[in-house]
Length: 367
Image 1 (cartoon, helix red, strand yellow):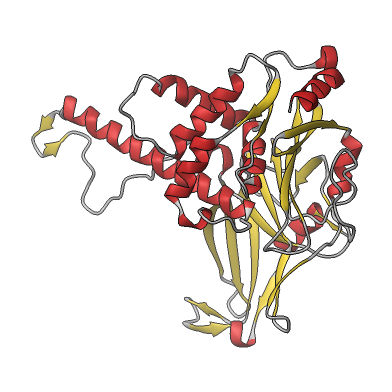
Image 2 (cartoon, helix red, strand yellow; image 1 turned 135 degrees about the vertical axis):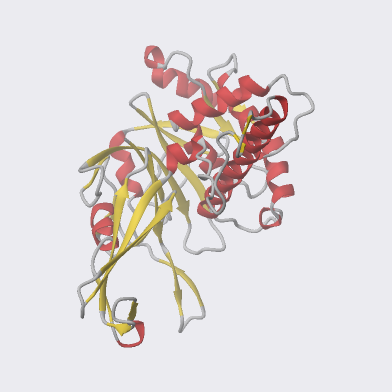
């Protein structure tokens, strides 16, 4: 990427952000799904900051077990500490660990970037929770609790469960949904809270993320075979169901569901609908965070006409500049070019002419 790197440095000139690094990632045959997500995560400020801190705090642990968290922290530190401003890095250690951890990613078949993101975040949560529990046990071993007449100090009463651990991954990506169901006979409202780290939205032709979010929170009537069992009526009743965002996350990840199973065809078809995503997004249906406002900073794009083939790229906003990441290649693009990735019936064209893309997107917003 020497020529591409120098071209990017030349394009930014004196505006090249101090201390920032723009590095492409080598593709190991079919790892564009991984590269595109990693670029979006690298330019997610709170996430990168936590990983660099994790590396700095654990780099002395030579006997530490190799896992996806240590491999990712090492990769991000490699990028951020490069002497050159641009170039290419091979995320070999991370990809090897990913394939070892999950057989789904071992083949050379086309993979799904959204599945990879969710797997990665859940895996990081598991590792952080395991480390937090181990640290707590070590602490309790070193400092046994003081004994009092009726048992250990600050002991948990029988039957009381400890609060679940909240990791920095939760603090960055997790929001809370409220699933409300109102019985149409007795008017009783049943509410159930559900945590989420991304929102998967159904799409329609010539729509927008704003309209998709409204549809996500629209009222659905449960009747006929879908009746709701009302505890107060003690029977199945017609009801109205609605999903609302109770607590908005710091980083909002939106997944557009572009692959739809067509029964007559017996396979999934890609919906090449045009879906507009704004650079600024207001969550008007949020409960606690009234009119939470987000700024777009990353888009992961699937290029191709079907679910079993294609290519992933990512668009990232860094220091008020938009960048186009395509594995080893990194280019600067105008903000106006972002709209060419809304989706259309045209195919994507490579090189500097990005054309229009049939894309399966994960859109990321920061508060």
